[in-house]
Length: 415
Length: 222
Image (cartoon, rainbow over all chains, first blue to last red; front, side, top):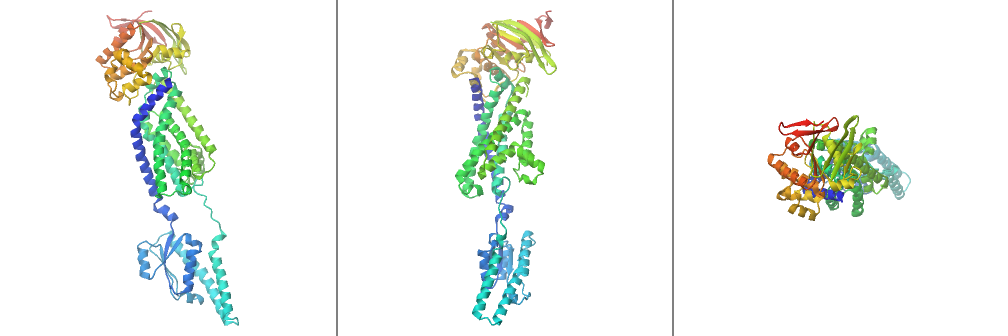
């Protein structure tokens, strides 16, 4: 009865504060969301997923060149990273290069194929790049190198062999079939070179895709910062109120649980609203997180389920920080520094694999680190029971610490 | 009602703050406890209020130890700590509703002690917009929801203006006339003068004093 009276007071209080808390959380979510979307759409990430556009100018009448381009466009592994765009003139290619529409421009002279047959290197393939563009230039130089030193000589060998066959006693038809077979085998070997290796994407941190990783990090960063929207709930507390409540039979346990439920509920309402908005952004196609693509609603609900456990532990952690730290400025500053540090160590901003081993180990056991594992497992559908139990244990430990701190505070009668 | 406080001791680490403090009081009596800052007055009051547990000692009301029987303490004892034990964002009504049922609150405001305290005049004002006097009256109002027989107050008139003090003293008189026992920790001579018995907290024990109005001084009885 007495604890319910105390709880009633806390509910009334959080309801009074909630409009301001909610507005702050929305502003905060928008700021983090915009930053996240800017990052997802920024050049670094786009460059990671986009193909290089390479312009090419060559004779459309030469069957070997057009066949080669067709094969590269449709069969070669390079089709995943290179778009070959044909141009009619050098001017058009240069214009596109200057307009940054293509990364490089290759001109194959008409005499190139004939020259190849006689190992004459005079009519080079000419490769142009707009400027010194780092990896693009290196890439183009490598392409030119491979063409000059491997492809050209190999194809020249085939053509020389063909000339020898035509000059021999073998009939023309028979020689043509043999040359075609050899050429086909050569092209097959050339285009199947990718099969000698197998690439598997293990993902960043906990097996997430790049966007999945940053999605988790931003959601968690939003969560740890969300509590600061509720700072007024903590700065307005008075020890005298705890004392009079204790004298009426509402001890530290009843007080802390009542306050925590209200604090958690306020955080949860704000987070649910934000997660719903994020879901619509994700399904609208503005940002595509691979982990949600197969079954968006089901995956998102599973993720949100895990998120509740995370929120439970992190709010308990922040409740403890706000309880043990006294002074309005300290109440804001100290938890902020602690939470930013913890977020950094737990890999919220970039993969913690970049950190020293000791820092990684610490990051793994911090509540923020375990929270990351829970969300990552929620996103990838991996087994999550142990991590969730850890979250529960953390929440209980933090609340126990708050109860102890409250007991001391009541006994001392000071903030 | 009879109150007996005997042999209260309390130690913080190596420091023994209370070394067997005790006193007796009857219905309608006002007990004043004075002493230097840090002498243990508020600690004693916190123990009597159930906020702190003593190392030893008893607090009997009509022969029953309310330190052990906390339910009886909740029924008979009310405590108003120093400062403002209220939720600042809420109105007086919301603060009172935490401890009173709707019916109790209505009755209290119409004809009970809440009316005597004048809380009905600012019932819907948020605590953050109240004056010091309003807050103190509301604090007392929140404390006395159980119609206590014993009221413990820690420096009730600290930082209050004269008019507010008079309003609170008027309530004290009404409370004493109704047979209640008032236990004040105070530094105010005016409040000391109101007391039937006065004790000085000295080295962890309560020493009986009387207040000589002629010379405005405390005189040791022993």
